[in-house]
Each structure stands twice: as structure tokens, then as C-alpha cells.
Length: 617
Image (cartoon, rainbow, N blue to C red; front, side, top):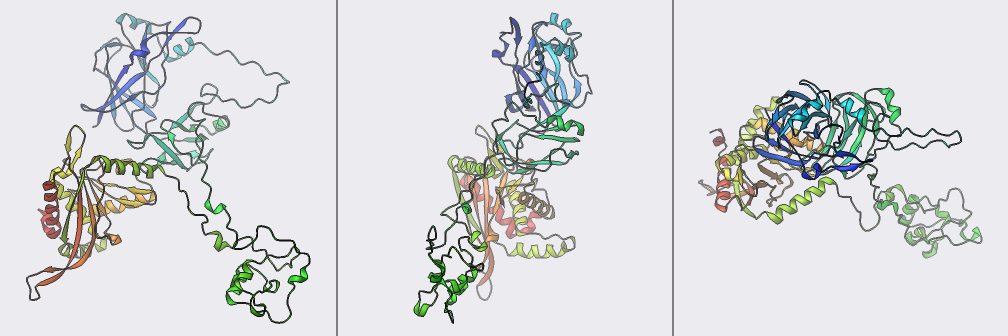
């Protein structure tokens, strides 16, 4: 079981009392948390739950709130209290275990204190984030002062705001005030933007799947959020009604923790939030206006004047008698622009109407009904972009791809090794196996064999399955192969986990499923974050060979080109044979993998593909 340990420690600045409100003293506390897995620290950040006020009517104490212990956590449950009221807590002692939506998390204290009051007994479920779960004090003689302490009594002791002045009859209709959540609003749940990837700092609300007033059931898709990795569906964790949307569709660069919407339990509570406005963090976030479309600038017809010159009398362009001579191109152009050729005066030989006459034709002010002004372009012309360029907004995914690739090329000492592989045996084996699994609607690809051979080669040469971690080199004992997939939003590398122990059918199913999810934007974060080795295959596009950029902190990436028929030496009457040869290039991080080690990996990889039966050993 994954066990995360949470440490709480107030900062020294916050322990200084400050005067407030006619000499009454309040003390503010800001904590620091550290998430740990075993002995390895994972995260250290500000608790971010706001100041916890401490009133001087009680001895100095610290209120311990329930923080968000996972990106999707909204509530937690007290699994077990490790300390009892009155117990002394030493630095590093475990106070309690909290069950989140991801794991069981322990509270670990970073300073000596005493547990004065437990506000939520063991087994209490669905405690909202930010709720005060216990009180700690610095001295044992303070414990008795909190014997009858409750959250209700603490709220009652706090000063209340003066009642609002009564509205006068002559006053105009009151404007909706910006009110903070409190007693004026029914019970509700504020949904915040969580961290959907380790590197995510902001997100974009792509689309709301639900509208205000709609009922929400557990598991329903609420919205689609574009992160720095992919577009991820945001699901509802419990039933309710969508009362208010705080961030509109298309809003870009929404910071983490920003309220996205309001959910209520009862449908009758929805009208109460019609004029609700978030006072902190949302007022300055506005949807980004779409860039002006280049098609908005009309393209005037060639040689057409800006305004038609005044025509004194229509007889100058009256229909000629007899036959009208029109060139084929002019006749076609006139039909496209709905121009009556009898209204056009030809300038060619013998009054022949040419293309130039049609393009420069200006209908008279008093024109027949059948004659139409050619100012408006035809529908076919409207679809053609105008101008000399088009500005395309940079998405979060594209921005992160650019940053990571630039960082990789600038900080990793790349070198490249290439080798040719005879694919005859693999192609023959693939044909035989596809006949065997044909009844199961499974079709093995060459890429499936490449992924399997890569994973087995990583076991043979574990240096290639390592990661550069600045102060250490981490040698991974499992091979999780990232497979590069091109999507409309950009490149993404979903993971085939434990590829070294999976069969070809299992790898084929995983790759097909992951590629479909990637192109539909439905990958979950755990499906593309991490990995120990990457394969990028452009052979299906006819690319013979290329060099790929390493995906940090990995040490290697394999670039796979297309297969082509080549003449190779053979022990036969002709002295040669025709073989299907594939070129691959291994990009290596020289900080982790030396040149001879990279060459050794390619030799093992080539053996597995040229003699595929060795993959069974």
C-alpha cells in the first residue's frame, strides 16, 4: 500500500503576534507540507489554505486543517488517530492517518507539541478540504482550556460584522453585490482547478460538458481541461447540480487552485448563485478573444474600382442588337459572377467581350434585376484564405513540447548510432502469427516486435534503461516503453508498461488503445507521464532514417525508419539475395550511456529482430 507522510511546520514569521481591532490580538499560522513515500521527499509546498486565526481568549494554539493531498481530492476520511488527547507529540511522530481518493496519508509533526483536542473522531468520512481536524498546543497546561472546545464555539466567539443598513424606500433597485461564500449562500461545493500533471501550473477550459442547472451524477464528465500534456476530461466525484460556471469556455492560462464552478446538492438552491461572483483569483481571468480571422479582410476583385463611377444614362450600356461575341473564359467568369453579358460592353475585336471586360464590369445604378453586382465573392472564393500569413495561437501542449525539446537539445549531450537490420525473419514470423490470431481480430504490426525487442535489449544492457537525475543515475529495473504518437494537438508519448514481460498480443492491444486515446485527447495523466525508454517510428511515412531528440530524464530514444529492399551477399549461385533492410538510429545521453554501451545495445536489439526466436529465451 502506498503510504504518504505529511509533515506540518509553521514558519517562524507567522509566530509573531500582531495587533488587530482595538488591541485584540490574533495570531496567524501558515504551514509547510512535505509529501513522502518511504524516505524519499516528493513535494514541498505552501499549504495554501489561508491564515488560521488564533484568538487570545484561548491559550496559544495551532489549528491543523485538512489539506488537499492529491490533485483530485475534495474530501478525506480519518482512518485512525495515532495520538490521543493530552499525548505529547515529538518531532517526526505520526499524528493521524487520513484516507484520500488515492491513498492513505499520515500526518507527521515537525516540532514538539501536545494534542489538545480532536475535532473529528476516527471513522469520520467526507471531511471537506480546509476543515480543522485537531488543535495542538506548546505546553501541557494549556490542554484543559480546550476540553470543551468545538468549532461552533470558536465561530461564536469571533466578532460578527455589523448588520447591513436597512434599505430606504426611495433607494433604487439594489445591484447584486459580490459576496464571498458564507451564511448568505446555501450549502455548496466549490470545484477548484487541480494539478492534472506534475509540471502543470496553468490550464485551459476547453469545453464545459454540462450547463448550469443540469444534474450531475458520479462519474459524469464535467469539463475538458487542456493541460501542458494533453486534454483531460474532468469527472464529477459525487451527485449534485451545476449551479454556477465561474470560468468560461476558452479561458486560457487559468492558475491552479482557481475556482471553476459551484455545485449544490438541491436543485432549489441553484437560483441563489445566479449573481454569485468569486472575489479572489477569478475576477482578472477572462476568456481570450479569438484572433481576427484572415478571411475577415475581403479581397476586392482585380481591377475593380473602389466605388462605381456615376453613370449619366443607361443607353451607353444597353444591350446590343444581334449576336453577342464572348470569349469562352469571359463567358465562364460571367456565369460564376452572375453577370448578364448583354450588359457588358466588349473591348475586343468586333466588340468581343473578354475576361478583362468581365472583371472590370461595374453595373449601372439603375440596373436590371437579372444583373448582380460582382462585389461579393463567390462561395468558392470565400473559402480561400486571404493575406500573406495566418497567426495560429500556441496551445499549452505545443508550448510545453517546445520548452522540453529545447531544454533537451541544450542540456543533454546527444550522440547518435545507426545500424541496418535484416527484417526478413520478422516479416515472415509476423505473417504466420497474424494467421494464427486472425480469428481474434488482432493484427500484429512490425512496431509491436520493435517495442518488444527494445524492452528485451534494455534488460541485456541496463545502462540504456537509466535516467539522469542530476546527482544520481537511476537504473530502472522495469522497462516502460514510451511510443511517440502524433495527434492534432501535438506529439505525445503514451506508455506501454512492463513491455519486457508482455506478449506481442498484449503490446499490440496497448498500443492500439493508447494511440486511439491520444488522438481523441482522452489519455489519463498516468498513461503518458514517466517511462524509461522511447521508440519513435516514422517508417510508415517512408522516412529512411532520422535522429530523435531524447525525452528527459531518459537516456535513450530509438528512431525507426522504413524498410527497403536491398541486395545483400548470400551463399547461393548468384552470390547475392534481396532482403528487406530497416535502418534505426539510437540517440544517447553521453552523461549516462557511453558510445560502446550504446553500440552494445544496438547489437542486442539487432539480434532479437534478425533471430526473433531468441526473444523466447
